[in-house]
Length: 342
Image 1 (cartoon, rainbow, N blue to C red):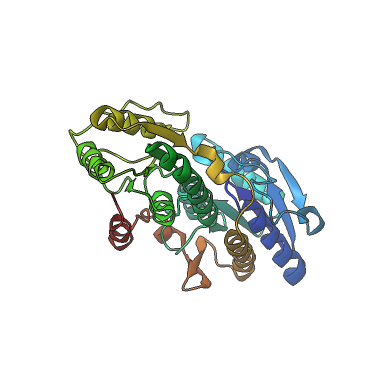
Image 2: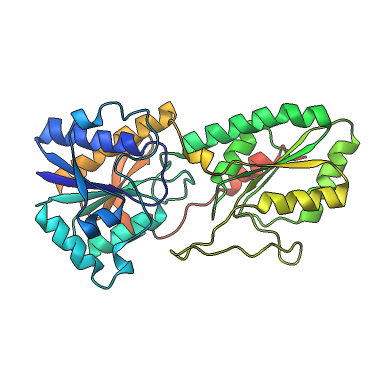
């Protein structure tokens, strides 16, 4: 048996642990060989690869990023893209292809599966926004990093009776913002699912600081949106893949807060530090389990499916169902977080 593996989209803590899990299960249990395609779908389009075995995967468990590289290119950007992928698949005599990625990569994987290539998906994203799984790997690490940053910002905010606006990742959903805000004792958390009124935010901060010397932490997901007519946002550029390049809403929120309240306000944008570096123990374990389960799925012929975490078990679910819609922050969780606002 021969298995292909690729990582697509943004990098994420735990990718290497998945690769290690795939290789260990494939080699030890099935005597199979694994081919790693370089830089995501580009590796399949251009037939660039490396052979992966247990020896090559030593030391990968705690290592961030991905040793086989990643990119946002995909076959359907090219007229002959899917034919090139088929050609590479056949040339390596693969029995199945394991695609590790987020919503964009897995949507493409589902389409590739419908075009007749045997694929298995592994859910990767720090945003935790993929349906069908209780958790994606990388999310726990991102929340840990954001929470630690908020803890550190509390002390400087307290020293100056200052408002600190912390921007975290979260293009369409606010899982990182909600979890880290709750864990870090945020004064307020703004997420894409709940359009905010900047006037209400400022009024809450004024009431809080009127009670005495307070430090306030406002956590903002990069995709947070103001309620219609309440605040104008700057236009964002679009990259060559058609994605709006977000980032910087914290600066606009902070400017409004300072202008409306006269409270000294500072900004911290965590950016890519959230998805770099060493994965947490939870993400290492989840990634490893996903990798082992993905190799099992190829062996068992469970194609066009995605491995997922469900009630502490790793299961396979139809890939089409998992990418049909994003997983948003639940009202129950956000209502719990909002009990501690201002």
